[in-house]
Image (cartoon, rainbow, N blue to C red; front, side, top):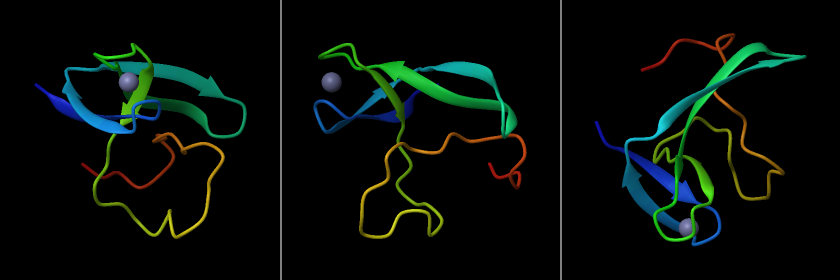
Length: 75
Ligand SMILES: [Zn+2]
């Protein structure tokens, strides 16, 4: 199944199968997100979400929050 990912280097959206990445966060506990390698520059890219909660207004966020198990279960 192909998902959409966003390459921060190319600033482009691409489709890939992606892989699940899991880790233990000292604050959030168990976390996971889906990543895929950009087909152009091989940069590890995060999943692209076209619609999101009011997480991102105008302004910069240092790093995208991963999707954690502690949040509300969506999708
Ligand atoms: Zn790229």
